Amino acid sequence: MGTRIQANFDNLKDDMKFIDTVMQIINNGVSGFIRVNGPGAEELIFYIGENVFEGVATNNCSIISDMIDNSLRLQHRKDAIVIGALVYPLTWPKGTLLFEETSIPDMYNWRVPTIQVGMDVARVYDEGKAYFKTLREKKLVCDIKPENVKESVQMKPEDFLVFYTLCKERDLKKGLFIHSHIDETVKTIEQYKRLNIITVQEIDINQTESVPLPKEFEEKIKEILSEALGFIGETIVDDAKERLGIAQITYDNVNLFMEELIKEIPSDCVYKKRSCKEAVNQILKQYL
Figure 1 (cartoon, rainbow, N blue to C red):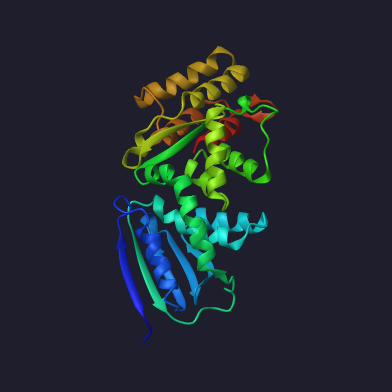
Figure 2: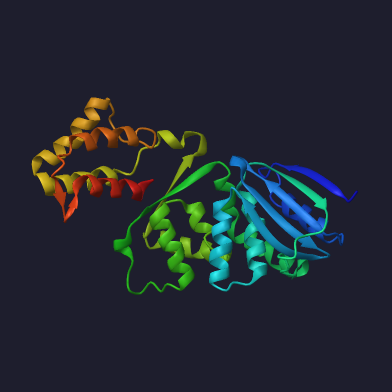
């Protein structure tokens, strides 16, 4: 029977314990896989050979799955992909590790030397550690102000991908890990914050659902309905809130609000050649 190692990690106490353990296992000259599990059934699998990383796979972890796909498309080096996957568990409040010595599938043959990863992972960690620490306890929600993007802001393909992800998802964690150059993405996000292209709101993970949506959500819906229906459009929004007995629209009541609102929008209401119902639902998708 091959070697088997199990470990639990509380990253709030020791940031680098997880990475150090992974590197020690690989440098023992064994082959097999390291399975790492975190909250919400997220799972990363590192396939390893003698002093090399052979590949990375995921289960229930769309963020790293997307990171791998985007990084390969952008022709990032595989050592950068390994490092991106290695630092991702540092965003978890806790996790578990299981190593099993076994043969690995032929499809995993990256041959990334651990010495190459070891030289760069500490630098990437140092660049991103402030975000990693915050993400263990908070959800970081971005409000985007695309009107502040000036012609002088130069965007490489990686930068545009970060910007597009933040606009679409409004989740800083997804933007941070959208490709494997995490250290460069941190600098990009910091630049966007300095230029007021994005603002970032910290939300306690345990209270995410009761947090209000940005005021722009309600304003945009009122704008659509007012243009299509006149003064009655704004009244429809206020009446829907009043019937539900809510003073503000939050993440936990927004679906009820939308159901109540849609019922009151006339079926023949049109906004810019689209039905008003479709237009307001499109606004909702931008914020969820």
